[in-house]
Image (cartoon, helix red, strand yellow):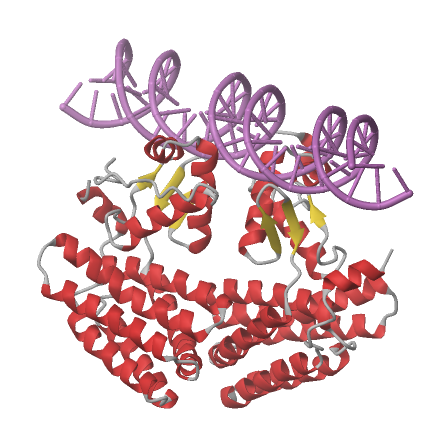
Length: 237
Length: 237
DNA sequence: CAAAAAAAGATTGCATACGATTTTTGCGAG
DNA sequence: CTCGCAAAAATCGTATGCAATCTTTTTTTG
């Protein structure tokens, strides 16, 4: 229903693909939890909401389905993904495999401009942590993921960058479902330590810190199988 | 409900998404080089070829575009991807990051059934190498990639498995463009060595062998920038 | 005769229409 | 009151049509 409580000014990237713009907005909404896992995203609803036909809404949903953020069932529709504990473990196993390597690659390519970008990023992260309210919480979640995406962009491998975009987005879903506490304040200091290692060109240390960081994020999850997602869905409306 | 559909279950799970079936066939054609890089894939052509409307043909092309096998230009159409040397390097850098880890994961999960599957896979690989003719060559290319995909499936992480599907497919394109020799005969023995390490549960050795294997594949490429495709095109009538 | 301009043709982007499938609703029997 | 079943509504899968954009061919002009 209230996919976009706050109406987005429909970023007029006139020449850009409209489906992609819708994909981005929906992804943001999923990532910072305005859209809960399991929420139905019907083609018609998305279409009227963004003022496009079902054709382009469908294309946007197909993209999200490829990224694993949306699960589509034939003749039933698209739903915000509801990753299982097993899927959650696989997301983090993938990150453990990829991100230390990304950190090493990034350490060898840091420029002063990059350092400045990271500093700005971490400042924002800290600011949202200090604030109160659900809006700040959402921004904090997004900023925390953006740190990892910034790192991936510095690493300079667009293929890995796309993989990371998918993994970070899925991690956000996983944390929404299985997260125990707000780990973010702890994560923030770890981000700062990683940046410090990167600044010093200490790639080994950056890599090791990243690995621990991922472990810490996953350790904060409660991945025991719950009493069935059906029950959970029955209780939430 | 068509009788013809039921009598031909070979055409990819009759009631499954038709777009996905088309995607698979096109991907196979790209991977084993029946479709050369740069070939135009117009929606209408694909549609009539597979006897579907442009709508579903378009969906299939969109999927391939996500996998990086097809490049789409707005208002111009879809073309079989033409990866640059830089993209090629990134594909292999990604594989170096991911596949050693996959080998380690697979080593810890090998069952006798898996070993049998690998043996069958390698037998087929060897058979195609022995044969002559372009058809055998295509099958050889596909079989060589399938070894890596089989390994990824044994590792048991569906996310990494999908990443590997993309990377293997793109590697095939890269080899088609920049490959110097038929490296495959060399690759075959390396595959056998990797399997041996997996069978012995020697994960470290399997991982190291995999890393070398990827290096060897990349070493066989000629990734120097060619004298510009523009010039090349200008000189050929 | 060459180069620029204009028209014709082809192809994509998007919306809409219609049949198929699923879900919900309404209603009567047990 | 609950259960089952049939009709209605909603939603999806796909084909097709039209406008916009790009490409090619033809025509015009210096």
